[in-house]
Image (cartoon, rainbow, N blue to C red):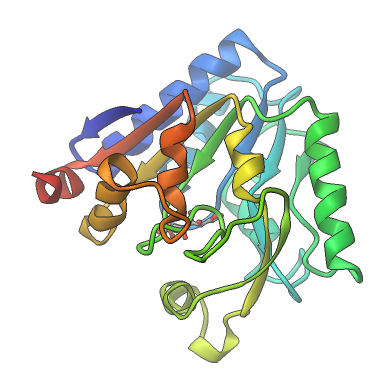
Length: 242
Ligand code: F6R
């Protein structure tokens, strides 16, 4: 696993955006796996700037997102589809028909999981997957558990994740309790993975990801078995790892 130490959140975001830029310059129809949450917002801002400056072009790029809350529609401001539109897609020259997010309103959610995996397969797989990490070591919404699921599936969210995500809602009771998420098997199939993390609350999870025993109780540790992972962390995390 390659680790890049950066000065701060901006530097982390810039370095991640540069890796994506280099891929898009080489392969302008790449399939990008995208994440929501606070951490990737900075790197999306850099990619938006690069697109405005004509350094990178998204007209042929396809994107697949990691996850979506169940029971929330695309126009709901709390949905991950809405998040992606407002933080990224609305500001770049991407064709929204080429952007995929699981449908949290699907009548048959198991079927939706299978459909989503087929979408990814039909696109030829993911060239580069961007990941954040939960304080408890979750990746996408693969929460610590006795077993993990390979494909896109329905999952309950843990108390810790519901609490962490409540900062985006009026009150904790409004946070959905279930989500559709890509599974670890699907994520591990991405040809390249970049994981971004900033702030000391992530230090424990990063320490386990880099040096811990591989266990389903810390899903991020599974990434130790992937052959092209770059972990980009800031100084606050690096200092706690010493
Ligand atoms: C989001 C996702 C989550 C987040 C994680 C960290 O699509 O899959 O795993 O990456 O919860 O979130 P932030 O970046 O808000 O700390």
